[in-house]
Length: 193
Image (cartoon, rainbow, N blue to C red):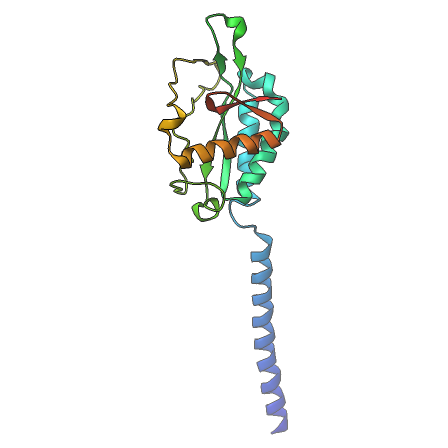
């Protein structure tokens, strides 16, 4: 009977070795896929969104800011958020068209509220925009948008919650690190330095 015992042992090892091999392949497959919102699929979608907006006719003057915006997005992704470039409206400072200046309109999307809570404040629902106290303008694709100062009434700072004031200051600092200067009284508007 020693032959049967050796055969049983060999068969048992075969099953165990196969099981361990399948488990190792499964774990290796999991390791190859990055967590969503950190890299890979989420990163390429955000990069494509930034590139798509900057390729529009009205944004071509700011297309050189692509690398800066992608760097901002990479920082946000680590913190459970994503950058949304909304367009490149012209911010009218007076009735003269010559005084208009083109700006980048941005917003921040919460991807993972638990991670985002370590960086920003306020209600942080996954899939919702970060609370900045007012909405940013949405530019219609394919046509220039002119935003007049009176068109978007901004509440005074003393009417905003401390969370909103914190989030606005945080966004100004983050964008400033990448060479983008905030436009006064427009939390969503940035121009190259």
